[in-house]
Image (cartoon, rainbow, N blue to C red):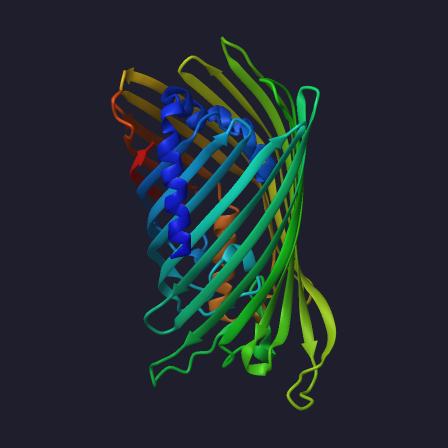
Length: 499
């Protein structure tokens, strides 16, 4: 109830101050492709002080539907349908202080996923509970975020809190259920030095998930696998151990250099470290694995805005590292299982380097991306390897136009291609079960494939001069084609109001 009151207060404040907003300038500043040159810096809440010129609030009902002819990643299934109710607001309290907030509720379905019986697979892999049967799951999520930023002298100061509560479950055997609580607190500062802002922020995160699998059928004797990477599992604790929980924590440091004027150099450097323990309920809270993801992200670029055009060039380098320790437990001493050794058995390394160019003139913006991506995974013993590398390119065009005094259109067209340039797999197939062989081979087939994709979206806003509220609708579709002869189709839609 308190959260609802807070959201209503924010929306009322936004409604009250909307008279000062210039709708045209807010629209272009919010939705232009040009925002790609600076949005990443807003991870520092202090830089939200001047993120937008005017107050703006948006409430919408939206949906996202995806279907794949065959699951490109079996752990995520072959599609989903996710309706969502969302509210976002950015309120300028004074010329030098702002608050912002977001609240959303999502309730939908994930289709035909297997080898994954937890929520947040992307966050926790390879340390997940899994089985080969799987099925559809229901997904429900509550999300809240809010922040405050202020300018005082040469300093910008800001803070932001994010809360996520989510559950994913199945209503038939195997009846998986994952319940997630995820809290992040971010604090930042930025100092005005000449024509630039030098920003620094620190973010902390606490993560919890309880995950269990129930079997109601008396005929079922299926067990769950405690996966440890590339088709391996912790044999001692697989089978009847179907109740686990995760304890996670982590942090991120971010350094930004952003021009306070319309022209200048851009630098963004971030580094994050996290830790996720997988703990067995049935063995007196015994940790069996610990996952250590790390990520380093660097962007450097230059941009220039004039009355005639806008142009920018950015280069990026991303390094993602993942390592998982398996804890070797001894025999029980009373109710406790002593940890005898920690073995780092799984490693993953991902690299992404590339460049992005943006050019805008009048009603049009264009963006071109190109780069190189590689992914390599290794399990130490018995040795397993899987990897691939790609070259990719993507072109986006945007047209924003006030076709009438009270009607605005935002059209986006995108096309891209990801081509495989190398792949490798090493597996002890003689020692693998038929189901694990199929799982690994399917994963590898789609990792080393090449993909062509295209996307189109259209947003229409209607707001007569005398109205204090505008209406909008948006539709989007995306298609992806794989060299293995499979495809992915995606449709999105939204209806909402803005003020």
